[in-house]
Amino acid sequence: MKFTVTRGLVAAAALSLSALAAGAQENPECIAPANPGGGWDFTCRQVGKSLQDLGLIDKTMQVVNLAGGGGGVAFAEVVNKRVDDGNLIVAASSATATRLAQGAYPGNSMDQVRWLASIGADYGVIAVAADSGIETLPQLLDTIKADPSSVSVAGGSAVGGWDHLKVLIAASAYGIEDVRTVKYIAFDGGGEAVTQLLAGSVQAFTGDISEAKGFVDSGDIKVIAVLSPERLPGEFADFPTAKEQGVDAIGANWRGFYAPGGMSDEAYDAWVSKIGDLYASDEWKDVMAANGLAPLDLQGAAFQDFVAGSVAQIQSISKEIGIIK
Image 1 (cartoon, rainbow, N blue to C red):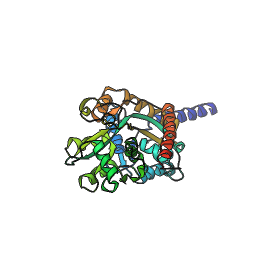
Image 2 (cartoon, one colour):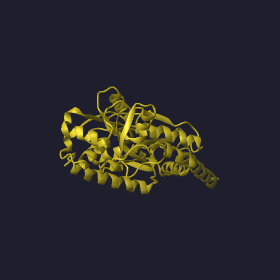
Image 3 (cartoon, rainbow, N blue to C red):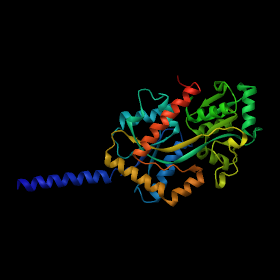
Image 4 (cartoon, one colour):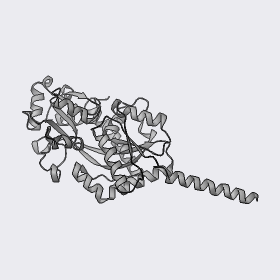
């Protein structure tokens, strides 16, 4: 009888662990570390919808917008309060790596969370209001050269963040020697930055093509440069690259997810598998094409290594342009 009871307890424990692993996404939640309308918000909402459409999750993904500190508020929330939550994923990007590289999340580092997978790369854009007299990137940069105080550029990352770095890289490539003269104004998300552009509070916008697309479609803004090596396909083919305008500036913003550092291996592996299956689907290829996402297929350990390399590269760039010492 003693053996029977023990065997029953072992079986029950195994069943419980199996249910826990299988149910790691029973109440799936995605934190978008910015206000609605930006790239992180797009990442959570589009991936959540696609996962459900493909039957990879059973319930609707709850999206929580947790803005502040260029993603720092969300990172701290996960590290300090949600450390072992198997239901939770968080939208991340080059902007996240930038803030981590520059020590902008006080007391936090990339190894406090688990990096899940990428869903593509989102090329940077520089845009102006649709009724702006500026038509090209050199025209904008010439205006900044002549009178830096006359142009403010808005972005959805903090000062020194990835949106900021993109316009500084373009300015440096164009021959603006002291890129610190470029006026950059930070907002919590690309949507808020575009709103300020349309209100006339700023003269240009730096962000990613996914967050700019809706405003282009509505006729509110015009893209004067895509920071890609060559023109993007499909409906983005009309957008000129910086490179073809004589500005050798490339800026690709990877998009993906991290998870709480204490997430179980079972839950982690389940999320990695689901996001990998999503990425491989024809449906996701259509989403990528419609939103200007370039291929970037990395999961699990490969993505963890990629993010570590990204953080190191951004530290180097930041030192070159004087953001950090």
